[in-house]
Every structure is written in structure tokens, then in C-alpha cells.
Length: 232
Image (cartoon, rainbow, N blue to C red):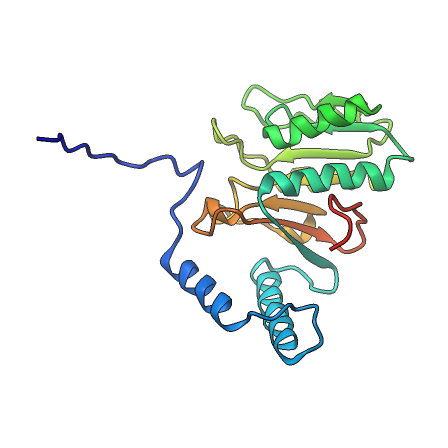
């Protein structure tokens, strides 16, 4: 007789099982809005209207001003991080080549930084205190040359180190030319976040019951990103 093996799934930091209502909503949209939202025929217009409705609902749930923020829908948080870092460097790299990262970044951020470094970027790690929180006093010298971009995870995926967004945004006010990327992949759906104070935020719904193969980059409309994919 075959032995019965019971497995208790606890790896929710990696992936959360998709919620039934999410799958039901996915099926509803796929069954009822088959038109290309860029088309001018009736089915396309219906699909565009439904997309606009759901997009507005997303911005409302995130509690951001739809006139100031926009959502770029991606395939993953990794793609969102790639788009943010490469997009900023390509669009604004003429002003500075300096990029600062927290020491706890996901590989999708570290790997991009390494890639940009090969192309001339100056990459540095921000100092942290013994508890893992950012050492803002130690960061002053690092930011004296106004880096192009600072990227940090909001919640570190292994030790659960949580950065204080109020302290972070207060610090960043002294460096208005430095773009800010927050990787909130392990935070969204778990802790309260004031998105309205942040320039760019990456996350993925599959961490809180959404569908795998989906990602989000919330960004201020005024922030220009060179796209990863041209055309289409």
C-alpha cells in the first residue's frame, strides 16, 4: 500500500494560494470582455470601459490621487523592479550615475544594479543599524552628491525587517532629485502603507491571494520611465 504523506504549506512569503473570488473575477472578465481595449469597435470599447473601471478601483483601494498616480501592470514584482531601475537610469542617467540600495534587496533589484554597473553606474549600499533599520545619519554623506535613485525593500523577506516609511520620506525630502523605489512585495496586504507619499512602489498580487504571473508598479505620472518593451 502507498504511504499517505500530509504536507502543511507554510511558505506564504513565497506564494499565497489564489483566493477563489480572484479566480472567479478572472474568469468573469475573460468570458465577458474579449475585445482588444485599443480597438474602436463595440467589443473593444466595452473592454476599455471595464479596464478603466477596474483601474480606477485599484487606485482608489491604494488611496492615491488618480490625477497624480498611475499603475503599470506587469508580469511580476521582478519585472516591476527591472522597469523602475532600468527606466529611471535610461531616462535620467544623464544627471547622475549613482544608485544607492539597501543591503536587503531582492535579486531582481541587485541583478539590475549589477547590470547597470557594467554600463557605468556607481552602485553603493546604504548603511543600516544593528536591528536592520536604515541608518539615516550614516546615509547623509552617501547622499551628499544627490544619487539618481535609492531603492529599498519595505519588508525584508527572510528576517522580516520593516523600514519606517515616515522616516524614509522625511529623509528623502532633502534630496528632491533622487528618485525613490520601494519594493513592497512582502508588505502589501499585510501592513498599512501610505502610498501617497511614495514615488514608485513595486509589488505582486500572488503574495496575498492574487494570480501568479501578475505584478504592479505604482508610480507618479510625472516620473518618466523608458519602457522595457517598445512597440505593441
